Amino acid sequence: MKKEPFRLTPYQVQWILIVGFLTIGYALYLRYMAIEFAQVRLECEAGLQTMLCKTRLTMTYLFKHYVFGIAALVIATLHFIRPSIVTLTAGLIAACFGIVLYNIGLSGVAIALLILGFARPAPATA
Image 1 (cartoon, rainbow, N blue to C red):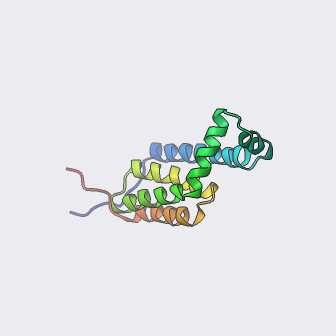
Image 2: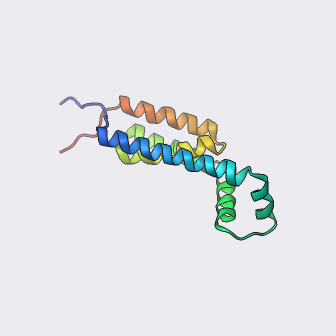
Image 3: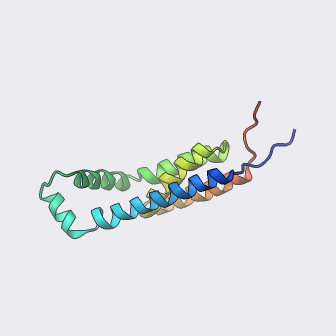
């Protein structure tokens, strides 16, 4: 029995596009309006307890410890071994955050593995 390569339906492609654009948009917002914006940085370091400051603190901790890049690489490896829309979506989210939030090396490799997942056969169905 010949296995077919992993392919997305048109609805899945639309889902991936929507998730990708929303993730990139939110990551850019966090980077330029929360992490790098001087006024927000000064207010948060002065002790302001808003949701933006808590999100800024969390995201800063995560990208300093390469969480986005490592998560993207692990999920992309799982997607390469057994491709599915769930692992593709999760890997895309982690990789987008990693690319925008300074985990470029690991996230770049993860994106390459996500692309290579399309060359693998899809899991056999019963």
